[in-house]
Image (tube, helix red, strand yellow):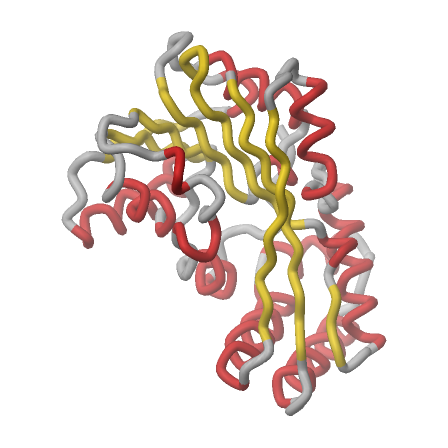
Length: 263
């Protein structure tokens, strides 16, 4: 099992909690129906999960441990959502029986697991024949921004190094089709979509979030503890994120790969 690079600091949850079907799973929406039984692997804070719950019969949310799963439990309770169940799971060895779900979904998960091909095999195993396995992952090497700040180049270099040290693959988006083929899928639709931050409000949110995250999250601790960066290095990167957020011509693009694979 790989280590989750981001951790669960408030600055991380600030980013993850705004995700919903519209901005993170639009490619999957046409495949959902009122009778759908769904598995959401790596539900995180649960914002996408509770959105799915409004469109399907039943959804099961998973996370790697109970503290992580408690985040989605709390959001479901807050929103009054009753058709969600919860299970602590390792995606490499899911506890569910074969053919248990109509749709199995993973958002920003495969980039963090030790063996994404095995994860997809397990996701396929628990999906009914003809059902859908869906995955969406960012591709860090494809991130594009302006103004061109060298400190953000260093941020990206450090993040990719840390993610790989943890056993993950930060450039997962471009690999999803390959991983699905290696897992035995033959009916695969591969697409792409993006997040783009270019308004003053978006820049303040994205840049401010990363300015905090590079100083306070599990990533920051890992970089310092491993000797990959000093606290001063991280403060320099944090200041650059703030400068980017304040730039009137600031623009940031996050590309994602997506797959719809038929079991």
